[in-house]
Image (tube, rainbow, N blue to C red):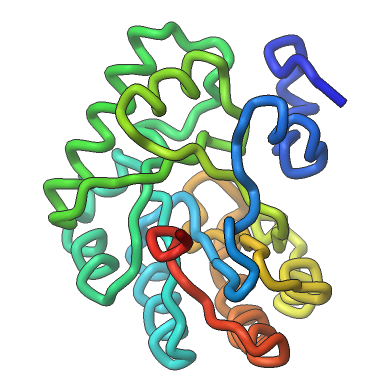
Length: 229
């Protein structure tokens, strides 16, 4: 099944590719690990002054490593938090400088956005990002081309907790994210609430221990995307 993303209304787009695997296949965007002996948890929208440190502590307690798709404007405000993410052994990726839907953005404007984000992330963390996830998981053709020109790997996910929702509970988030977890899955969560319901990161934090424990029953580990190959 091939869906023309550019013709979809924004209300339909959140996030389309996670529901329609054919879109990911058609555009060559991976949503699972290329190996079946591990799982990956990813966090979008940070860094956040409360959510990010709490998530980092929970990951440390579980001995898990993650990938954080960082927003440039938030890194600019709190570079020390971005630095801490990398210092604790987690991978960082680009989530854009501004968290905005890409479909109406010009190629030049988008190129400037991506370069600004990547520069801030690299300066703060000391690591050049290798992975890219578009805001809301909605890639445009231009964003895919620009990312690949920069040597980045666009990446989606195979499981999510819908933790941005106002009424999402920790139990519901854990059930959606890991209730049917299988080896090779990539889980989407958020360590920030800048672009979602206020305080939504608290539900994520409540769900995180159960989500992280789910890997043990599979006999696999949580790895950053940089260790996926």
